[in-house]
Length: 195
Ligand SMILES: [Mn+2]
Image 1 (cartoon, rainbow, N blue to C red):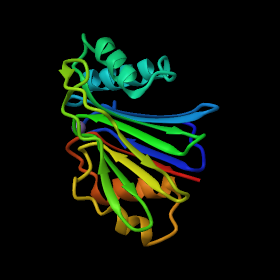
Image 2: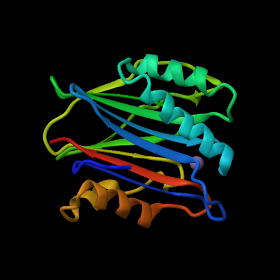
Image 3: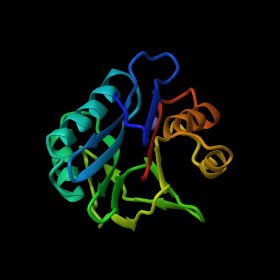
Image 4: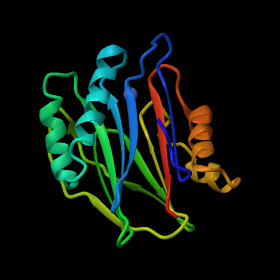
């Protein structure tokens, strides 16, 4: 994937697999940025198929709000294994981040003073979920959103990693994966830094 300077993405398949069941994307639209990370259930080709289908479905529905995007993906993934999915939409006119997540993709927003978790909806995209309103946060310059699949340890010290050096988003994604990624599941990290 071609990444802009303020974004970073790394993914690696579970040990023994060649296809990764996690998939991430960033879309640069004139008025918004859209970031998404999906983890197809389990691993291997069928997990890969579900995650890729979620990205393809989002690509066709980038004009929708988060609720619309998740509804479209839920429909599209009905005949797949299903996936967990997180989507962040940044409105460039008002610098508002809207983040929705179904299942265990973790999303952490690092600001100068704190780290907060965003998007904690439950369910499986493709098999149904209970929708609740997405989180909304006003971004300021330098704020960093880190999204990662459960192939990365949940207690990841992203913040320590982030402040320890002036890492680029791509370097931060790589550092998180290499330090806290597990080899017994697909693992992926998507980073966005607001500029
Ligand atoms: Mn996983």
